Amino acid sequence: MSDRDLVVVENLHKHYRLGAEDVHALRGVGLAVRTGEFVAIMGASGSGKSTLLHLIGGLDLPDHGSIRIAGEDLTRMSDRQRTLFRRRRIGIVFQAYNLLPTLTAYENVCLPLMVDGQSLSEIDARARELLARVHLSHRVEHQPTALSGGEQQRVAIARSLLNRPDLLLADEPTGNLDPTAAADIWALLRGLADERQTTIVMVTHEAAAAANADRVLVLRDGRLVGQIDTKGHCDSALVASRYQELAR
Ligand code: ADP
Ligand code: MG
Image (tube, rainbow, N blue to C red; front, side):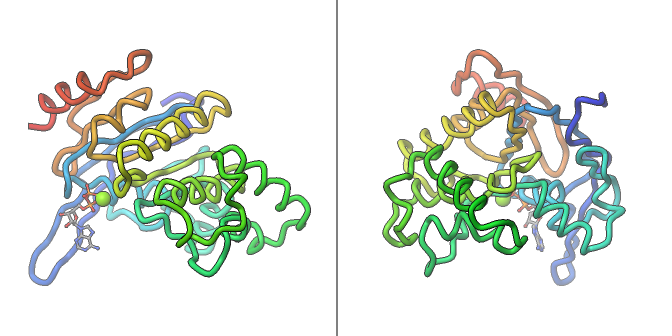
């Protein structure tokens, strides 16, 4: 690791007990992500992607291993410390958007800061700036049911950025979207990494999604099995063929 690493994960193990069955979701994963880097973690369904992302986001704890973000080890925090750390420093976007249905786009974006008790004028300016950044200035008063899937995900991304997180995590953010809406989301994430040096970790099973990252880590059966360097060419056919070699 170097001191430019924002995320340092070492030897993560996680298993789930499902009835009589023991499922080893992660079997010793280590990785580092530099500040400002956009990393994709690619793997088949069931390879452990969501488990890994949830651990990096402090939503769950590993059986073994450490997760350091900006030098702070999530596994050594109390539940309360970890919750506060996550709320202040990590943005998370899920496949299912998770917007509150009775609130407008604007209110959904503001909600996390309302909880933290920041000044209303500051929240208002920041929420409008972020909704503009995700190209939704004309949709601020719309509720989620009046928005397309792609628009809902853009609201969720704006919400995730409200606290100026050090780290943005995305779990299959375009899994429910048509190709055009998905391409808009990838361009948005790529733009955030390029313009604001937002550090992004995105998990996906799609080569076309992963090709937008600077680097692709390939996860198979709970282990990282290789890396694909994508910086500069963004060729999804190349990512797909390298992935096929690594994942089989
Ligand atoms: P992915 O996101 O790559 O599809 P997951 O991390 O969701 O993979 O799951 C990895 C493995 O762990 C799978 O075999 C899955 O069935 C299992 N798993 C995930 N979450 C749970 C859980 N809460 N209880 C039991 N098994 C789980
Ligand atoms: Mg998953």
